[in-house]
Length: 152
Length: 152
Image 1 (cartoon, rainbow over the protein chains, first blue to last red):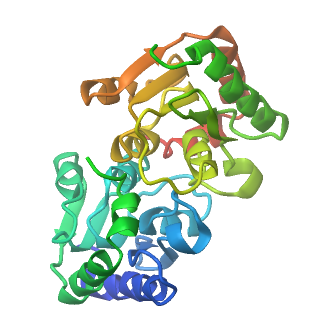
Image 2 (image 1 turned 30 degrees about the vertical axis):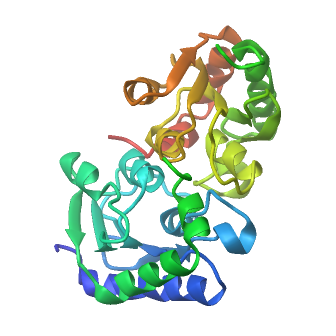
């Protein structure tokens, strides 16, 4: 990591968001966007269940919360779960150069695709992130499946 | 097209959205999501300028407006402009099987990537969509550049 904050420190913010989402009965994925000097630009969590909003994943929530920006040079997106195509596309389109992933066990996600396309990716294999998601997927399989586009 | 409505009929809804956005000074990209029987599920337009919301592109607005759905089988996304990676990722993640694009002249977009990955893509080369976007990009180059992630 070349960022000022460690990946673990950034992940703590995303995990707090995920837990806030879980406490409200939502899909427990949280994310945050940090600037080049480690400043928090935006944070948020999945709001499918809470707001009936299928377009607010953790990463899109954090991105929205960071507001309008002329560019994303030097930023880091941190998320508790490997990003789906929607969120990976966000990271690629806006050329967010670094991605920190809490876990990629409960969802394969597209972090490898981003790495192939020049994003500096760190997967932390965090057991707290994995346990939170695993529990939700077991207790609410339909909401989780819905969040990634339904059955194949 | 196997859909009940023609691509041109669906595009008219997206173009109306884009014009609504343009009238408010926003990035003039509109989109709509249609169901298997040609029913309108959701429609919307880019709201970067209007709401200071960088996560609401035309396609994400239409997707959000369609609400929670267990799957997207048989749906068609129609957009005035070829989708960026963010919106292409949305279409791929949620397995929206058909995409109608108004124009791909002002922005290359990722419709070809979607076609390679199984989406049925129709590009209509609509001159009204192209003129609307071309005018905005000429009059507000910074807002347009910002909407696709800033300078390379």
